[in-house]
Image 1 (cartoon, rainbow, N blue to C red):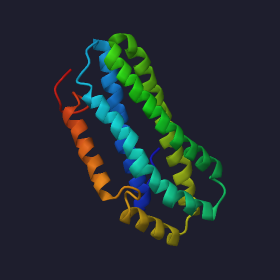
Image 2 (image 1 turned 30 degrees about the vertical axis):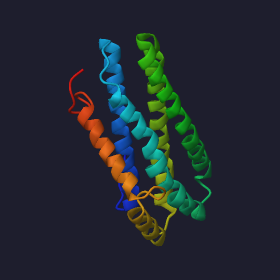
Image 3 (image 1 turned 135 degrees about the vertical axis):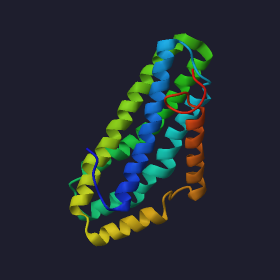
Length: 198
């Protein structure tokens, strides 16, 4: 169940999750359609999706949590320590899993149908992994934050998220991610996007 909050930091995290979920779901729909029809679209759309999934969490989403949210919670409670340690480990693992998925896509492109099932299975497993990751952030970390952070903490956290939406790469990278998301929508086949049908 989605948390309701008037705090911009919470809303930004949940918005990031919505965007990532949309790209993941779109990727799975395309892969499932390939499995059913045997026809593949221009693989550029899957490459763009994987690039987005790789770059957006690493450059935009995770730094917000690591730099602002997690330290603020750790100042107030030890209640979420295990969850934060798990999430930090998942950040590192997720990066490797996306690289593995990119390699599986390359194999599919080179070897054709013989490599499709392995790629499709890996994509489904990755989507399950990342959905569980986002659930842990929302249901545990954000729930604890809403319980233990003071109004002063929230003012500081909300200001930090509002000022520094992309702490590592700067606003130019975030704008690039928005352009990439638009590209995905424009080249993905329906019902994922508005590009040519498969």
